[in-house]
Each structure stands twice: as structure tokens, then as C-alpha cells.
Image (tube, rainbow, N blue to C red):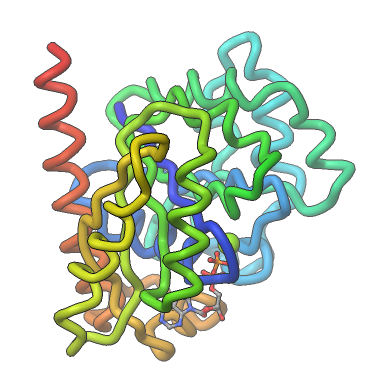
Length: 251
Ligand SMILES: Nc1ncnc2c1ncn2[C@@H]1O[C@H](COP(=O)(O)OP(=O)(O)O)[C@@H](O)[C@H]1O
Ligand SMILES: [Mg+2]
């Protein structure tokens, strides 16, 4: 089904947290792929279903080794409390090198996993990220940003140089009472000029330190009704509507 790339541009707005909360609340069968070339967080943030640390030998590196031969991603995923399936990311530069040159193949395979949408944490879209090789295969890119002037400025400037064509959506991480930022961020992004990739602010993710902390170490696997989880569920429905609409339009 669909591959949805989640990323940030500068700083740490909460892209990894969104990738996890989106997968946990996704209305269809989903798995979380930790593709951040700079290293994944899940091995530190989550434990296996039995409470033991996740198996460091099983994940993106083992998957990438077989990706040319069409490896089955489910042979490389692990379950975490709550039954969420995760493809554990790289933990060191040596491991990143092991994935080198395979990002396009990984994207092509993950976009066509039967009956499963893949939510991919792609890390920070720095200018030479190898993730640009994978993005053409994704159904959509969701970029997380805080609504500050500097964050949105960096986002607009990065979108000008992004060399890929795919639908780009923005999730604004902000307080639950903030009704203005989404519109304001859209106005700034629209000023990007004709060279820029056009990006649409799709929705909001609640700025929720307690909810985010729960996902970073203290998660029992019960889907909490934190503002973060509620906003993720809503954003997930919006994303699916967009992706399905685009796929139907493409025939
Ligand atoms: N929606 C949020 N509300 C409050 N704090 C958040 C939120 N998302 C993430 N955080 C916190 O911000 C820090 C960075 O989050 P992370 O998801 O790793 O960001 P990124 O992947 O963009 O670098 C973590 O301490 C996390 O708990
Ligand atoms: Mg991250």
C-alpha cells in the first residue's frame, strides 16, 4: 500500500514522535520504519513485547541486505507493546554505510507492502540526505515543524531545493489552543516563489510534553487519549483521505 515519509528540516520538532504516534493511531494496518540515516531512537525509547530490549540485529540493516532480492519486510520487523510493528533503524555510521546505495530499492519495496501502509521516519532533510533517493517512491511526505519564524523560514528555504516531486504536507506542532499558526505557516510557505516545491499545511499535532514523554520510554502500549494521540489520529485520517484521493486521481 502507501509509503508515507515523515521528516523534519531543522531542529527537533518531533518528527520521530509523530511517526510513532501516527503508526499507533493509523486507521489501517501500518508499520513504522525507522529510516533516519542519522540513527534511530526506537531502540532507546521502546522495549519488546516481553519487556526485553529490542533485538539490535533485526531491522533496517538486515532488511537492506536482502532488498535487491525483494526481501519481506515482515521478516525484519519486531513487535513492541500494543502490537505495533517496527523496523528498527541504524545505530551507527557503520550501519548507515551498510544501507548506502539501497535507499531507492528500500523505497520501492516499502511502497508496495501488501495490505500495509508504511510510516517511515526519515529524519532531518539536510541537503545531502540519501533519503532523497527514496522519496520518489513515497506516496507523500509529511514534514513536521514548530510554528516559529525561524523554523518555518528554514522549512520554506529547504523546500526550494528539494529535488523530488511528490505531495508534500506539513504538520504544525503547536499548543491545542493555537488556532492561528496553521494558516500563518501556509501563508509563509506560499511566498516560496515558483521554484519551490509547494507544500500544504495538512493539520496540527498537539504540543504535548507528557504525551510525547509517554512515547519516549514510558509507553505501556495502551493507546492513551493524550492530546498528542488524539491529534495524530485526526492527522492520520486526513493523510489517508489525501493519499487515497491522489491515487484515485492517478487512476
Ligand atoms: N508533540 C510534542 N509535544 C511536546 N514534546 C514533543 C513533541 N514531539 C516531540 N517532543 C519531544 O521533543 C524531543 C524531540 O522529539 P523527536 O520526536 O525525537 O524529534 P525529531 O525526530 O524531530 O528530532 C523529545 O524529547 C520529545 O519527547
Ligand atoms: Mg527524529
